[in-house]
Length: 289
Ligand SMILES: O=C(O)CCC(=O)C(=O)O
Image: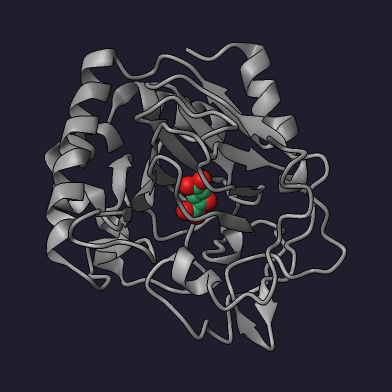
């Protein structure tokens, strides 16, 4: 499954790319279904519970930025969430046999468009009692520096949780003035590969300046014994279990926490939350291309 070097890379750098997890047929099906949702988005001019739209989206030229809960709207995404190869990798990296999921989304950067995702740590959105959580991104397209690949600051998962607030409100992006992205690393993969980043790893992505789309299907996985510090009801918590049994005795470890409170002034998606930012968090955008 994973080599010792791959596991070591994930633990030391906080991220990993694994090629060839999904077959060409599986990727083609994910792509076809995603195209259908882009078609459906023509019917909307405002964000909905399902669709998050690029600012220049129109019915004539649909620009779907995010499918908010892909698993809830199509079986093909649900199968990907439960894919045994993915769950084996997740389990090996988190060091637990039980696996729960706590979120899913499909981020789309269309050809020569696509909003950036400003630098942030997922942990700033959903801290838990332990940090054995990670996100897996399934590449529906080849993901390269040119089309806005995921960027990660290596080793940042072992560092502090940086401030993600502006004027006292959570903005979903790093506002710490000392933050520097000069040593960002690119996660470039062929279609069918998966990116994995630790919940505390600083990451983001630039707009797509290439003629090729970049569609990344993201699943957030958590250890079976982590409990969300911002709260949950028991039924929703249990519904996320993919392997193992629901556990009401969470493992509590010594993790840094900075809550996403007071709440953001703008919600709906990370893109919307980040729109209130006064300045982009990318300082070396060109260097990372
Ligand atoms: O789509 C991307 O490049 C980054 C995704 C991400 O970090 C997020 O949606 O929270």
